Image 1 (cartoon, helix red, strand yellow):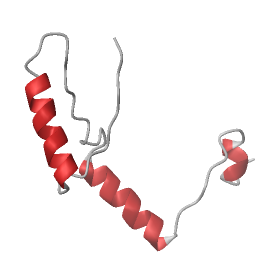
Image 2: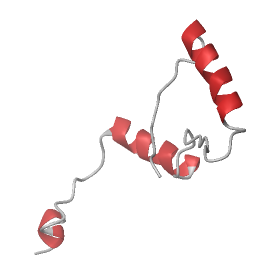
Image 3: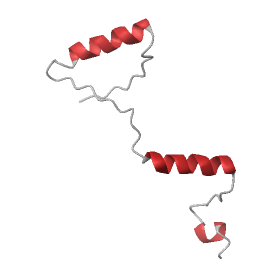
Amino acid sequence: MQTITIKINERSKAGIAFQKMLEILETQPGIEVVNEDKSPYNPEFVKKNKAAEKRGSYKEINPNDVWGSLGLK
């Protein structure tokens, strides 16, 4: 099985035509259309992280030296 990822501008003429073609192809055996627009992360979690990033009051942790990054060495 092969997976192809395509980004489509849903507002353009070509995008609208491509989506209609996909709807027709989706009914054919052996073809599965998967929409993966949804983020696997909890929206509240993403919102908190983006807010913290804007504040700038966070500490970057080196995964190779976690205790040293926290100043606990």
